[in-house]
Length: 214
Image (cartoon, rainbow, N blue to C red; front, side, top):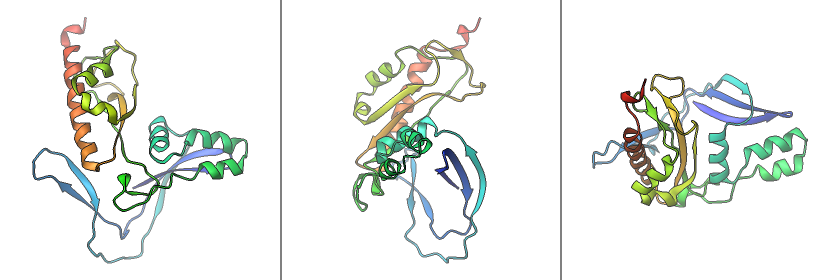
């Protein structure tokens, strides 16, 4: 599946599509350590290349979402929100200039090139149990428990008001996110996310429970 943000006139749209029979293949690699963390890598094997048949699933005319906006800004140096404003006022020169990602090369460079300065992950914080209460200093508690991840957090935001009590059966299955990055490897990033998720569960368990429901 392919997701992309594009522009038509003064409109911003999210486009979702599929491309069956594509020649590019990804394989799942799992470490021998048995830590349960797996990552995808491009396969170097040769595959037959039948005629691809891409098709469009949907087009959503809307502003870019916050998750993709911040990730793109920090990783590639492209501000999707600013581009939307420039497109609305038809400032084509600035739009074209600011649409170019950073010039980080490929190969062994962090982020594997394509303009990315590092590997980046939009790490959602799931609701892992019923009746979760989010403390006001949620991120501070997690950072205190896992200080090594702090230099790798670009941005963190809660999507619920501190003190809110809600169930895992609610409409929103997460409470917020950090943007995390690594200049070492994609695996290091996934390992940090796993540690962060574990720290979040500990903090939430300490302030949550069925006894909070009156």
